[in-house]
Amino acid sequence: MKILLINPNTTASMTQAIAQAARAVAAPGTEIVAAQPSFGPASIECHYDEAIAAAGVAEQVRLGAAAADAVVISCFGDPGLDAAREATAAPVLGIAEAAFHAASFLATRFSVVTTLTRTCVIAERLVQRYGFEAQCAGVHGTDIPVLDLEGAGEALVGQIEEAARAAIARDRSGAIVLGCAGMAPLCAELSGRLGVPVIDGVAAAVKFAEALAALGLRTSRRGDYASPPPKPYAGCVSHLGW
Ligand SMILES: NC(=O)NC1=NC(=O)NC1=O
Image (tube, rainbow, N blue to C red):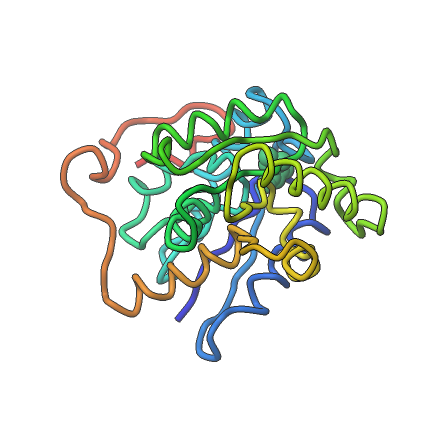
């Protein structure tokens, strides 16, 4: 089985860190192929970053999904998710959607701890879109920049731990969702410290993707997820049309 793992930002070291977290949980027969857009922001921390990154995800799915049994979009905003599902019949999972589902199996209420506070509204909109308003008790920012998570030391891990403890108390939640792909390498450490399930969306998405692919389930080709209608694409994306 082959899973195309797309980091929607353009920081290669983060792509590798995410791929390492995915390979740590992938089944023996699963190959993780890591990719990132050829253009776009070094990190995704606002609506504008996300708009550009969504196009980068579409590029990588268009160019790389044909040989994949599943695709994972490894940014907590799930940028380009619907476009990716039009662009391939392989199952496409976003790490936020996967993490919310995993948390919903483990607790009646869960909290999200993420990076910049300004990105909370992006996660809150996904909670609504995916139908988890009754179970997601809160989304909380730490104001840790995404790229500061690389090689995070005790100070940052402790900061995330404290934010998670405050969220558990304030929200009366029973599980924590890590609201950034860059937090994936910290999941085991935080799980040991917090005493509640801590869900990393990268790992959850990889395992759900394996399950769907193993069941032979693929994205519906009817209705709004049918392939895009053929038309010319101008300029630097002329090779991405249908
Ligand atoms: N909430 C976030 O920090 N999302 C993210 N920005 C990135 O560049 N990767 C993420 O997962």
